[in-house]
Length: 356
Image 1: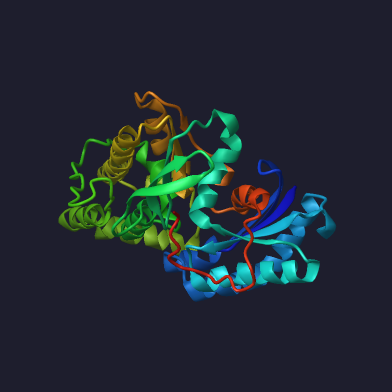
Image 2: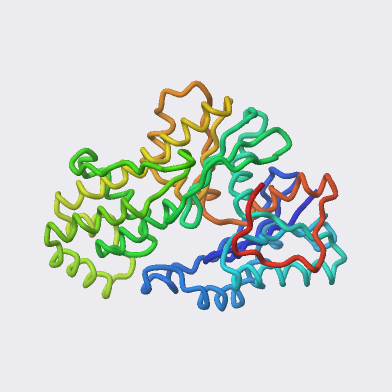
């Protein structure tokens, strides 16, 4: 069974062909970093326009790379939420048009479930249930109990900023380019993670929920107290001439105190994520831990999670499958295809779609 997946929930236009839920025949991603970089974040209207420009070429390229004809497809899968409504509508409308013209089944997929399947299709039978899934990206920070058959129960979520969003906002505050997560991760290795003591968030009610707004504010107060205006201005000046500096260029414009700040910020984020993940895993008796989403690319998080003394295996996706892609959407659609769980043309884009 070959499924064409289409993903357009935020600022990547992606298409992929996946066979039998695990064999990736093609995966094409068109990024919009250059479009949104000068604004320091994703501009929804611009994202929608870029999806319109890219979607036809991306789907065509994915089909060509897979050496796949329309008649070879068993279904078309598309992200239906959560995400930016305008961006979601582009992918969904395109998928519906293909299904209508080619008389193919349409399968709507939850974007967060797609991230989980990015790991599941690589882990295969090594993934033991019940599993704990930590989905952490620019838009999501969620903990799910995952049972055999891929049913889910939400255990915890962020009450404000997602972890990846906090990275991007702190990077913008310090004068670095968008997306900020990779930049801060690369610079953190040069700093002392114990130099600045940031408090851990204490949650009332559900102790497994996350909050990163307080940490972001603490970084702002630290910057204000240490009068960093001149060095931040120097970094912004560099961006005006070079929109994508390398880590060596950034390090030259980053004093040691700022490197220590970055390392301490990253260490606190990682502690927040893993402390709650370990508590949730113990609560449900997890036999494996899945970490997925764009922040799963973070070297500090990978090192800390894989080095933790926990009695169950930890699975991360390959870096190419950590950020938004369509292979994960096609993989998540495979069990639905086998079970006959199809969508109809009345399916709507849902910005706040909940995985349950």
